[in-house]
Amino acid sequence: MRFLKRHRRFEKYEQPLEDPIAGVANLFDVSVVFIVSMMIALFMAYNMIDLLDPKSEITITKKTADGQIEIITKKGKEIKVKKVTDKRLTGEGTRLGTAYQLNDGKVVYVPE
Image 1 (spheres, rainbow, N blue to C red):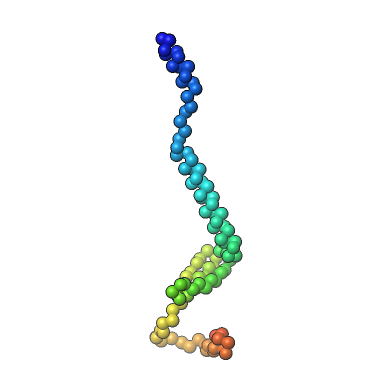
Image 2 (tube, rainbow, N blue to C red):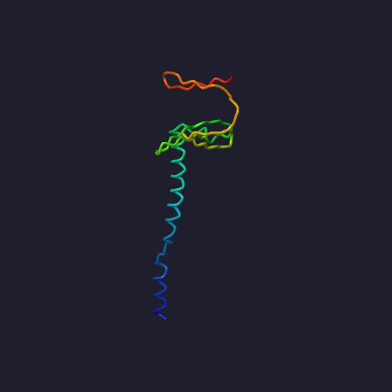
């Protein structure tokens, strides 16, 4: 009997074990906050906050590393991506106007 009482005396001084996964959950929360803050910082750095506005209209021209040109157009909530190529096209159609290239390289379109 004496041994059991003595053993019980030491039980109240034992520390409960902590859950080792509890720290990982906090790291996940911190990483999500970091990612969102980085996205907001990038939008502000490139002045692209208008992309988040559902009433805005934006046109962006992007040239890729291999030389392809893409035109990204946003009207309201709809976003369209068009790829520009240098391939010649053939077919039937109607004449819409005339395009002139100026000496400085600009192209002017004059409708008929």
